[in-house]
Image (cartoon, rainbow, N blue to C red; front, side, top):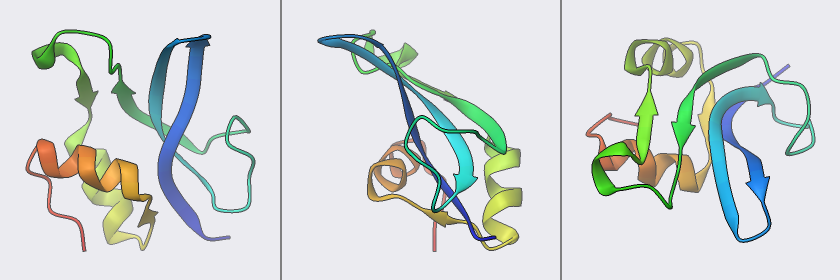
Length: 83
């Protein structure tokens, strides 16, 4: 099983919010997660948009989890280094 850190969509039409999760790379977008790391709420104020556990994210990256492009840009906003 290869893990991937990516977004899981919640919310209603035109009012989305996302959870940053670790999933099997073959699982569907809203499928079963291995672990939840935080959330991304694009509609909120700038300082409340991104919340996640940086230590857990770094631990999963050390275990070999890959990162989606969107999550990579979110991590870059919070200065978390990604391979």
